[in-house]
Length: 126
Image 1: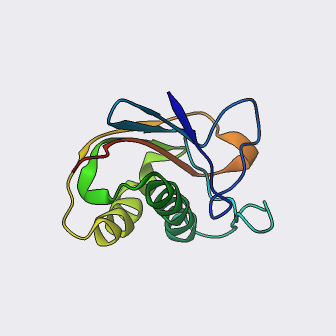
Image 2: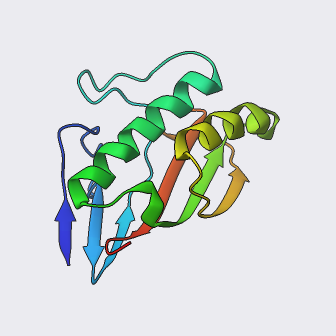
């Protein structure tokens, strides 16, 4: 097992890694809309928060040598499923045609008051 760490994504705010590689699979921790430079939450609409989460995941994927084309599965946590359509629009634009399997769940709360969190599994040889 190998851990992945990049300053281009928020540092872990607990006892976990940004991501780990096992074999040819990358497993990321959930990313919330933290700015990696300031470690402050991105405020604003679900669209703004979603963009930051995806940017954070981009950085982890890059550090691991992966891309969205190799993403097998994402799990999305939203605090309000009423945000689903707005979230989905940004998600679809960002993935540029990649269509990993996905689960989306409404949760009661997320760390630091985030409205969205995403984790993913990717193949490194894709």
